[in-house]
Image (cartoon, rainbow, N blue to C red; front, side):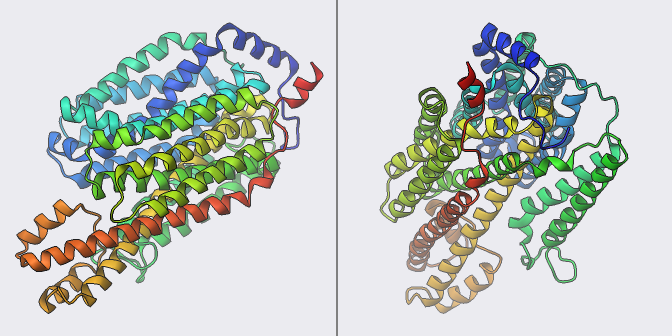
Length: 552
């Protein structure tokens, strides 16, 4: 079926979807929303528990960061394959299988005595499970809710994932402080068990009936996406083009550039291979003609920008709270609550109060709310700023993200027939992971570059810093300045034997440089939000199911 085919499934399917939705839509949302929450919670909790996990497993922070990188890689590279498997063997079946694999990974991680076991449990098994679960969630929503109810359903599920990212520091901080990080993974096993008990209540569309999977296509997509994502994830360590001091290089250029170029070339060959299979009448892993669908293309681009902006903002704001203001993980999590409130408000109320509103206009309004929140943050974050400065911007950001979440899932799925929803889910989650990875890497690079430039210039021009300290700093700062708190910096300067007066001057300069770095990185996120507005005309002006609603 080509990209120009009808955007809705057959009428019989619609009837069964309506019956399923009427039978237990709330339970379906609870099952799928809980799954989405778990998928997003892991990395968020791990990011605030790195030091504790490293000590418990007798490894280094670098080792845990490697586990996080591999987890992201496994998920991102297998999303398209996971979506295709759902179309072949059934969405609910592949969802249940993914949950079982994920639970095995969580249990292995909870009991892990060392890093290698954690790599198997978290990075591999949980990564594979998530790659099967997340595309299936997209397809199961399409199979359980009629088109007119999908914006609300997709909005709530997307809100569950975003709330997990916001609540991760709070949950991770509380559990790590008062118990052990292992309890998070043990609790996931229990939650997945409950999900599996109720998954039979989720309606499943019949499997597509294909028995063949394109193995060369799987290899091409995994290698191509893997090179792209790994390159982006390593950019802060190796450098985008010029290699950082002491880091590897090839022909005088950072490996990141070669990974990005190589990944793009592999994906180009992958798409040409898929086109060849179509011409031969064989089943491809991914039908390249679907990219000719304007609405699907617009939805995927919007998803990419949403997660690019979201991950960039979520990277910067916790740094301000936890490093600049030196709040605890628990205190940081509490300050992020307005984001969750805004998310829930728009994710629930927009589809309910504005069911016939234009998806294009709602997404544009969401991007504008995000932009205003970012501008208020840039204006509010200064040397004298307190934690309260993030309250209104986070509420606006939550309202904006919730507005996008209430529309984009329905936009992408309704662009294609329902029987292709699992494949659309794979593409949607791939776009999300690419945006998320790039957002964190890009904003992190801007933050460190601005911080380094400001601090280096400040030290070089300060009359309060002795020449010997200036010369030593120029060497030490060449590889980039770490984003550290005043307390950490004072401790390091004392250990290095820097005189108290000079140490105080450096701390003051670093405090100013941190604010400049935060402002620069938030400015980049704001520019990206403006850029995203230029692609919104690709989105539909009428909501999914508008024709059906008008005819009833």
